Image 1 (cartoon, rainbow, N blue to C red):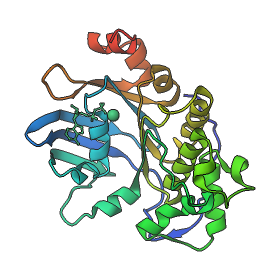
Image 2 (image 1 turned 90 degrees about the vertical axis):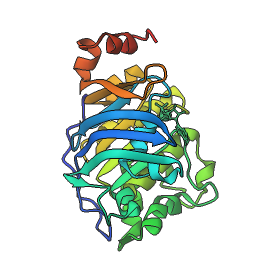
Image 3 (image 1 turned 45 degrees about the vertical axis):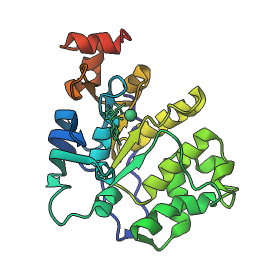
Length: 275
Ligand code: ADP
Ligand code: MG
């Protein structure tokens, strides 16, 4: 991964936001159910701070479920349950008394389909996350600029911050969603196939953004695009669910190892496009 080696920019000051900086995320022996159906088993992964971890594997093996467990969105599904632990810098995000909203403030999420508020201005879209989370900022203009800048969108929209978010192209809308997530200055950013709905040019712009923010926040990205996993990630985890079995992590490690010297034949077959 060829990160631009720029010094970390000081972030605009917020009150009520997460503690500053990137955090390590670690799952320990995660099991996940929908009703009585076990869909994930024994998932233990360390996702180091300020690095990009890619989750790869076929459809239906539990990657999105795992991502949602990492920021307490899994519990929004009424039939869902889980076992195991998720540690954010060593603290269990499921500990008694921990509020899901506080967790989601520290661990942001970007989805496959860009979902800005279409009628809301670009500026207000960026600030929308703050309002929802009860975070305050004394210099909103600086925060809007910084967030859009970090998401690689500032130069394209600086002259039309009052235009509706829905008027942007798909790729720009996705970068707006990234800016909205970054505005609260999370410690971790989760991305679930953020480029699958986008054209190749927009995809490359977002990969560039990931490369830049990937050394400021911890990024966990689900992708079906093997070239993308190789371009953006430092670590890779290969998920697989055998027929009528829950998804499991077959192998994880440095991206280079997963692609060029995997130890499991199923990993080799998957990264080489055999299934
Ligand atoms: P992936 O992201 O790897 O494609 P998912 O995490 O979306 O996989 O799904 C894992 C399994 O859990 C699949 O079998 C899927 O059908 C099931 N599943 C996902 N979401 C729900 C849900 N809300 N209710 C019931 N089953 C679900
Ligand atoms: Mg998915």
